[in-house]
Length: 557
Image (cartoon, rainbow, N blue to C red; front, side, top):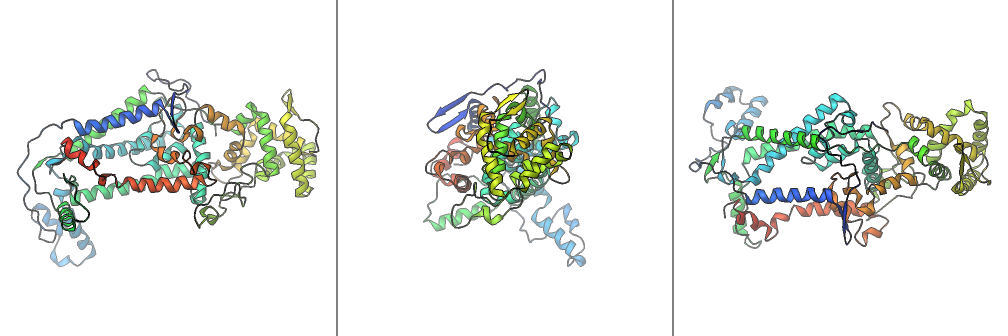
């Protein structure tokens, strides 16, 4: 999973690959880069509330709207067709569409006067950012998935896509194929697997994540955004919250307020050039993206491969391979969706979603990571062939004894001219197998073999990543880059780059008792984050917060 490294940022780029600076308070830890991003977001929102909007000339109150079932007037009435064809499905659909969304609603030139606020600009800015993200996807599709690693413009599509969807951004991070992408995938899998989603949404499969990122999620996003825009055009811009909160017991007042909010706006209006505003917003979003991409370098720490691992930390590689062979490694005893083990199975409540989803991506660690790759070399090595014959013909209990004995002895391994020398132990043919496995890994052949075990495209990194993640070297690299869970790493990026601060709510539960000590912490994190996200929808109804817009002059009060 190695990709070219952007060794030299562009001439205007600021290199942020140096180690980041972090602030710690109580259970919280955050990078200075993330804190800057949050401060900028708060400052922008505060400015939108407080800065006066350019004054425009208001018109008279809007005339009474034509009822939807009334005969439409104007030039577009001819598009209804002949009344004799009114019973045709096509004619009915056209008439319904024109009555529901006539041209003056689809492309309005007047809007309620209360939209004269910078807060209402966020909507069109979000649409513009989504457009830029889609266009950036086209560029990457033309240049290929490795384009951003070598092009000086850098990687910005995942960051821009956040404005449209966290899911789109998440899959964007997974498709980068650098170390950060690897670490997000190998750690994110546990939460997805624990709730059964990993059975069909495999974050270790680069090809699947790429298709989600460029096809499925964008289609869903565009459909949702399109439906939202059409609904706004049909019903009009949402009315501002009333200046005074209506009590829950005052049913008559709440009913009247609901009817008023659903009714067409009867107050003053302002000129509103929707196409001009959309064009300006898109130009500004595109300019910001290009400027930031040119000024800031791109985080691109190379991914860890089995080859690089075996070369840099051969002792750790041998110990991990022995653990896979005797069944004590994480991948060997993980559980669904990889095997029937129980090592990583989690449950909260009466239903175990992980076991219910079943084994959908079979992984036999001993066979897939060690025995099967070695069998392909056996015809070329009599010594290896003899060792494999001895090992495979022995009972399972004997195989485990040999692998366990080797695993204990390999902690004292020494290397003579690159060859592992392990203290004598009752480990049978395992030393010959492990020495060959190490040479195979160092040559890069093991990486290729683990990918080749998956048919067709070779984009499923489930096996190599599970193997690498069981080693200590991988976690040590992540800890050095401040990416582990104890370091609030889910929010961080490599170097001094801003990360994903919006994931604070998910990360929080891993540090709050009693959830942080629960063996099912991943399930708790998913459940509680989902509940918390739903509760955020109630923020506008919290007393005090709803009084901010009228106090700032962004709605009639």
